[in-house]
Amino acid sequence: MGLAIIASSVPVLLPNGSYLDLAFAPIVASMSLGGPVAAAWVSMVGTTQLRELRRQVPWYGILANRCAIASPTVLGALTLQLFPYRDIPLVDFVATLVAGSCYFTLNILVTALIVSLRDKQSTWHQVRSSGGAYLNMLALAPIAWLMAQIYMTAGWWAVLLFAMPLYTTRIAYTRFVEVREMFTQTVSSLAEAVDKRDTFTSGHSQQVQKISVDIGKAMKCSDDEIEALEWGGLLHDIGKIGVPDSVLLKQERLTREERMVMNSHPKLGADIIAPVKRLAPEIPIILHHHEWFNGSGYPDRLVADEIPKLARILHVADAFEAMTAARPYRMTPLTPGQALAELRKFGGIQFDPAVVDAFVKTRWAAGLTDPGRPSVREVPLIGQAAGGLSGGVPAGGMASAGTTIGGSTIEATPGQGPAPNGKGSLSAEPA
View 1: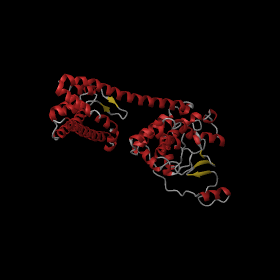
View 2: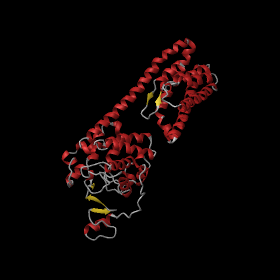
View 3: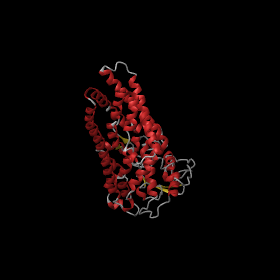
View 4: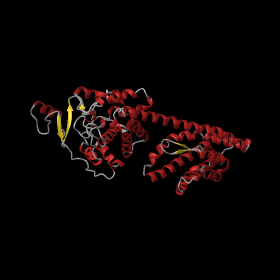
């Protein structure tokens, strides 16, 4: 119980917001030593945390935590008692591993259920977020078995020797979290440095990150996908570090050559982070976040589901942030309601309608009037477009390279995709 109290008093805050402590080993050892009753007392008393004593956790939270720990502990101890021939060390060792697995599995399930009810998220999502800790905790089961054996052969005082390996394990978890946090902070600083090349885009990447993560959660993306959106949102414009100031900061309309330079920034960004293996999931996001749903984007002119899902999410977040912020080419930003109307207007053309549907469910669209999806439009065929450019414009064809749709003009420079950085007159442009 003393070891459990010490282990619980210094929990490690994980990146997903949950706390991890090492009381698992003393609790499993108590199952072997004293059965269900002793294990229940150790789990209920030994898992008391300082934040609970400081009243930082409400009473019902403390009660829920105790239920999530004590109930699986008792069931794990009962499972351990079902094993015959535990006087054989190997059998007792295997039985302890099984009981520890039963205890921690049930603990994860009960905790996930409580958290899902509190945060209104799926239970499976919460279980997945605990998957990384699962194997790490089970690795402590052999230590728990050894603790029980030492207690019975050498005496209770010998168990205190296990405080050191438990402490070093906690340090390892802390270092892991610190390294990940340092990595995230480095990425954030790099993204901010790129944004600050233009005073109008300072903080842009952080905002895009927040919006895209909220959209991802609304679309029930996995934890790995949410993490990819976090870092992809920060790094999506990293390629602009290779765009000259004469192009990046130009307030007048870009020439065709300048537009080609600007359109190269997704490819430049993907090339920059390619050597970083940890950022491999972010490469498709960075490379394709300027693709249009109808295939007129860049760099690869992908269409609809050919565009990676996370890139489609980031595209909507990027466009919304750009429209609601001041830019040199548009000093008066759109209101959130106007920006939402633009997202809806160009759903199926520039944006994935399903992603826009998810955006409407986020806090960024809270209280806004949703115009809903636009009516289905007839998309002109390539042959019709070519005929229009040659002189005869059939019904539904394009009269020129600048086509008017819904009252907004999409500047379509041949071979270059949509106007980057808002240099065209389409208001729903990404930054």
